Image (cartoon, rainbow, N blue to C red; front, side, top):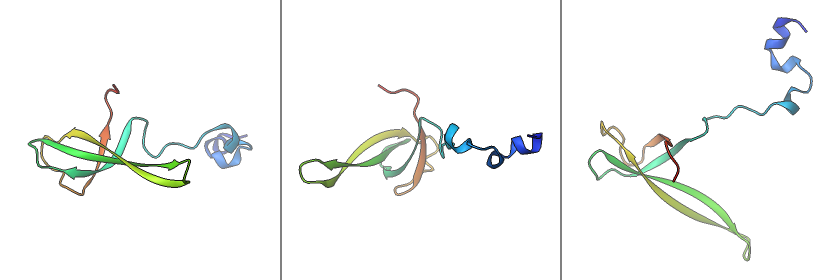
Length: 89
């Protein structure tokens, strides 16, 4: 294959089997919604996830809230924000 063909991944046979698709956001980055901005320089961000209850075969919504720093107080309630996870405890 020529250099031009190597640059274009569609010309390489089996490329979709070998390589994974790139992530939309890097690992450790969360895009979530602001729930509360009542504190000074801090916001509450909600993360929703759904799990299936095995007994009833129904989806149940679980919400977890995180506190994030908002130094410039630019984020308001209802905004979507990008959070970078620095440490996981």
